[in-house]
Each structure stands twice: as C-alpha cells, then as structure tokens.
Length: 131
Image 1 (spheres, one colour):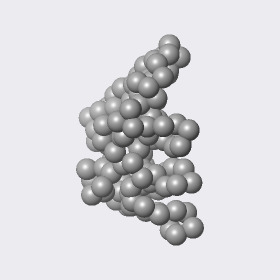
Image 2 (tube, rainbow, N blue to C red):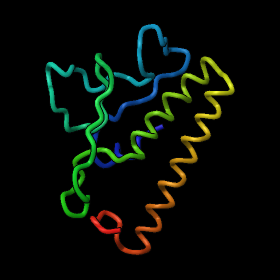
Image 3 (spheres, helix red, strand yellow):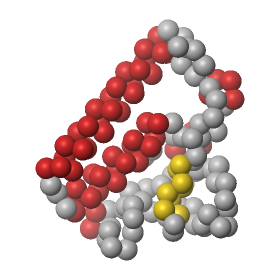
Image 4 (cartoon, one colour):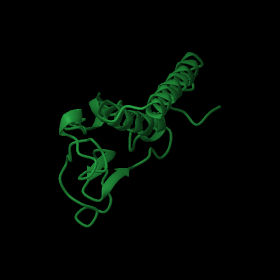
C-alpha cells in the first residue's frame, strides 16, 4: 500500500514489510526505515513528510492551503492510511476481532475524508482556506 502523498513528494515512500518479516518485539511499525537517519541527524525532516526512523515515526503536517502554499506536509488521510497499513500488517500476523473492527473504522474514515474532498472539488474550494 502506498501512502497517498508518496507519488507527489517522495522518490522512496515508506513501504510495508511483509507480515512474516515484521517482528513487533524489534520494531514499532511494519514499515521499512527509509530514509535512514534519526531525529538527532535531521531534526526537521521535510521530505518525505512521513518518515520512519529508529526512534519512531515523524509526521510533518501540511501548513496552509495547498493551492496557496503548495505541498509542504502530509494530510490527515495520510496519517490514517499509515495507521491502517500498520493495523493491517499486525492483523495478518496476530488476527483478532478488535483489529478487524479498527481496520473497518479506519477504512470508513478514509471513505468520508474522500467524500469531503470530492464535495470540495465540486464546489471549487478544495485546496483553499474556504468552507
């Protein structure tokens, strides 16, 4: 699963590891560590806007409307997609009803975020600081 922002801003987006290669005792998230580095090496990572590092995950959020300032961070749906991918990988390795329900709710959240975006595009206000 590719994160939605990856095609626009990163040559090497975080990729999900295969469930069988993910050991939650060794890793907090089932994503390959790309790019390499740490918060100490690069305290303000701008690209990619979701960065998996040894200390954890850094999310750099979008600041300002995209049509006014351009893409400078990830969107809420990117964060939800990241969480969804993490849960899906964990559920393949450790399936349970609760994970499945959480996955369904995250998929539902993405559906409604997409519906909101489509509505805003139809009203010609998507990417603008307008209601």
